[in-house]
Image (cartoon, rainbow, N blue to C red):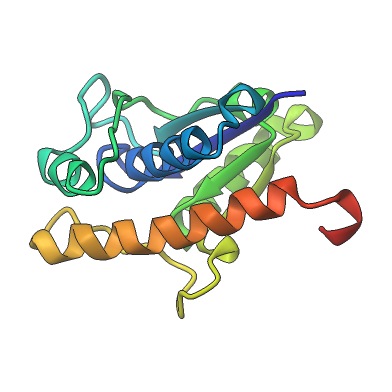
Length: 162
């Protein structure tokens, strides 16, 4: 069975495409690509069709991580078709949860903060690096690598351990 994951941030050009890329990189390394369908989206539609921010792409490439997606806006149907929706911060979590309530029982995705899976982070929110410098993008990738490893371990754990 394929597990479907959707990573969500505000504009879908920094944090969520980075989470998608990091997770894809991780499952490629572990030879698990056939077990997962991975995508990303934004709660806002300002950047629809654009690739990830060039600064995030550069930071990811320095780690050997490719960010393949183009920005798209979260749709109600995502809450039915994805098993897990992982948000980058509490504002995203509120937006997605609100959309799920409006959608009603057809919304079957489990919605959580991405960093709830982190093992080393001391925060539950991935900061938006958009208005900062290069160091902010590196910090986001550090957080996402930690969280993606934890997420994958959690998803692969026997059901009794979850």
